[in-house]
Length: 442
Image (cartoon, rainbow, N blue to C red; front, side, top):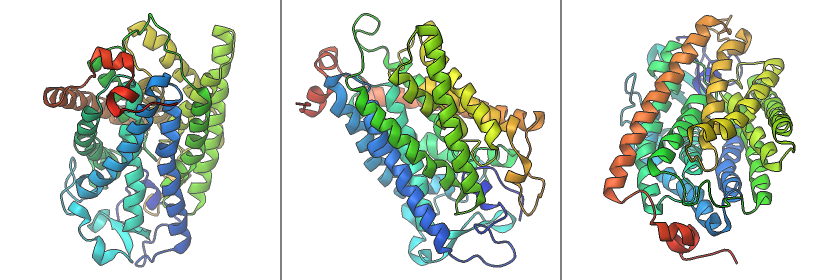
């Protein structure tokens, strides 16, 4: 088998340990399967209720229900889209750029539901000790949260009908192909040797860039810069951020695809990076604005979680602290200085946190990767940080940025032509809860 290696699935699967068997046919391991079932539930919790509460707490009262509805509806919609075609595009054999339709409507699941799952074929085959049903569900939760993150950039002003159409198209034509590039053994970014353990490029850069493009295409909120757009209930946002933090252990440690040493290291560095970033954001805000805010603390924690995501399976605790500190400061700059300097209205800082900190994390993975953590039986030395690895990371980040930005722009224009993107000004002033859903918070 080849040294494959690079992402939330294949990197971890090829690691020496109980989740990978080369000499003999693998068997389902109940411990690995139990951990992956738990991780899947944790990642789903990140969207509902985690992200739903996090975003809802940061909008105005008149848009709280509509904001929650966006995360909830995306969880339902993408679940169906993923099983119909998204999973097949992302993890069907295909070629370097696009999976085939061999898993359309989850074809083949009925015959192999009680057997261990193998990704790829031939010399590139990657064997696991979990059933494919669990793998499908785990990856589905990633596919759900990625477009849900985009909604933070367009909060308060996007039509619900436009969101549903856009999410469907974007999940199939942007998310699934990039997941194939990065995480399938046939993918061209995978073949480069790019390191993305749990979604720095696939999830965070992808969502952040799409959010930035969407915010610019839709334009600024009514009253942006002249009216009070303060959050309605930061208490909800804190609860949401706490759920995101806990759920992220499933996101990162679950990407080891087994209950093993890499999962333990991923969990440890995830905690350290989140903590360091929260402190860095708070102290940066304290130094420049005079007061440390609750919003800054929770935003900083999320920034650290984002940045450690691509690195979680490749770095040691010391570098994780550095990644967290850099991410906290970079996120604070992106959510305040950069946004205000360029004048775009990224409502809840989807790009400022996920885009910028995803880039930071992906690049620093190339600097701090620790060889033995990424070692495989085919390459005992593994992939270590250095200029060559960093350049590969730069290339992977650049490709994701360009494809996502161009593709998202085209899809937004198509959706605008079909159903229109933005609510009318009077509907926006009334609030999306009433104008789109006929409901309001008491």
